[in-house]
Length: 293
Length: 151
Image 1 (cartoon, rainbow over the protein chains, first blue to last red):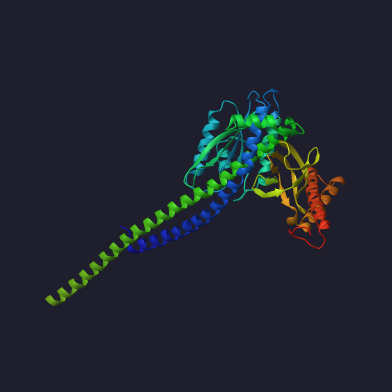
Image 2 (tube, one colour; image 1 turned 60 degrees about the vertical axis):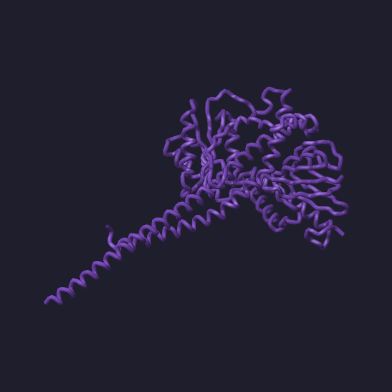
């Protein structure tokens, strides 16, 4: 049984912790809203690009062959994975889940895998695992802009075009909802043109359009943009996921701290009551003893 | 039927304009003007100025490359970056130009292994584009800066 003084100190410390986690929760909540907005705002561009690319790819069907190096499926000798994680912790199981998903994926590959890490948590994980890191990008901030992510796309595309790697995957947390962020691993290169949801529309699209300068030129310009866009999107998802995971984790922490405070207060009151009773007994006992004398 | 024009960048929808009569765009094969009932078109854009005309009113955007899709009097511009001409900060563009020129000069005098020539040139081109667009606008409407229509 801890003493009353120990209990009192413990309650104070738990209350302080609750104050901190509560503040972090509020900060994460407001940042989360903005991060989500940014992810939503990026969607029109992404959707449009996907539709156009699906249309172009279906048109390229007659020419075939390797229409563009970024579409070429080469024999796979080396693999790269772009591992996107937050820079910071205090976000529940998010980082652990991401690292586990990427780690499992890497372990399953038969070819050597090099890592391009975005975010400190993922970088540290692969450094600890002694995986080969080709590049790292950290401190992108809470609201990364597209120009922040262009360098990452550059590194990936260059390595692919120079034949350093033959296949590239991206691993990032897919923002499903505030409560759910799912780690996913997707193929980035070679580009697998998105299947149009409506196949007929895409085919018509390619038929009807006049392309300037030519379909191949448009394709050559669009493909790098498509990669940049996918990377930017993944990084926005990561930002939104981090803030929501942190908000939820901090809310749980605050709730736990409050619960603990309640329990400790109960124990403290009991102990205090006991002591008062004991003191009273002492006094009453003393009085009785005096009476007897 | 007039045109509906949408300018979209990777970060957000920059502007949606309706009732446009003529759109002049910096196509990679040369400037092109889009009128209503244009055939479906998909083209790449170079860095340049995008001009909307609605009646006698004219407004401009500086874009730095991208794509343009025209279809059923709807024009979608997927720009790498876009900025409304009236929002261009001339002083900042001027400063960026001076900085870029300085860096290119350093490179020429080969003091510059620390200078990224490609980046400096790109940034020079960007600042010149913005200055040109802003300048053109100022001349077209003397003494009336801001987004108001032309008299």
